[in-house]
Length: 114
Figure (cartoon, rainbow, N blue to C red):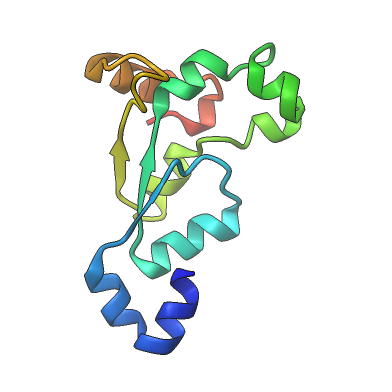
């Protein structure tokens, strides 16, 4: 992936290309750090959390509550210096820019709010 390209071409060249990762949802702290190091932009869909997050949401039912709480770590990405690109993934979620901003600001997991 991008790490292999950086090893081959050099980190500066990869960072200058400003690559992005779509649907960046299931990120560990190590992945967030790698995004920052590689200069990646995280393309995220905050409405996913608004619709499927929370203790009783689809994420928790399908992935377990502990794992669900780690999804969509917007604040951690920003703290690490990773740019965020918000999207809707319409028609999966509504094409609603203000709803998207609201979903990021009121993430169901408070520590992920921006």
